[in-house]
Amino acid sequence: MREYSTTRKTAETDISLSLNIDGSGLSEIDTGCGFLDHMLTLFAKHSRFDLTVKCKGDTNVDYHHTTEDIGIVLGTAVSECIGDSKGINRYGHIILPMDESLILCAVDMGGRAYLNYDLHIPAQKVGDFDTELVEEFMCSFARCAKMNLHVKQLDGTNSHHIIEGTFKALARALKTAVTIDEKFKDEIPSTKGTI
Image 1 (cartoon, helix red, strand yellow):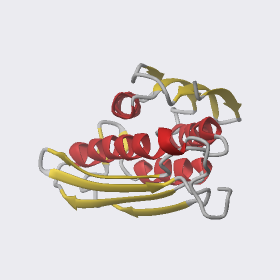
Image 2 (cartoon, rainbow, N blue to C red):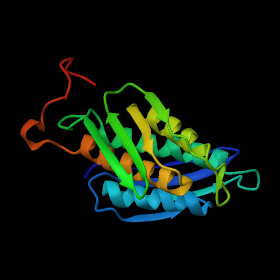
Image 3 (cartoon, rainbow, N blue to C red):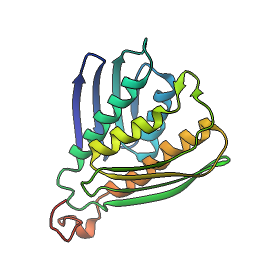
């Protein structure tokens, strides 16, 4: 089993997280933000990762630090779970529909952090969640997972659908990328011999 558990405590957040990327999509999420809980729950379901997240953050300020720091911890956990990357597919991509929205997501677990973020979310908030925090999460996540992450909105007008489609697309693309190819399970997926 490729799994990792960690904690991160700062003056702004106190996070405990467990991740099993060979799981079945079970989740137990409590971030203090209902919308973020929803996104992480569906991320676990669609990636088939088992994910537990508990966060106490300075939500009296807003959800910025909570969202950013969970991205940091989750990205780190993904990187730790794949280790030397031996046998993984490395790449994953999907074009995912969510009602009227259509999201492209492509990932490369190649050890280099890069985010290409091209979403145009019309509302400033979904519930009490600031929609600009989606980019903060993706940036932290991509950096700490050491991955190239491209998310592009091809269509969509409903802010909830655009964001939900993005998290589902990330989950599906990432699952493909970290899955072990049994034919090459002892090989590093790079001509360099290392990621």
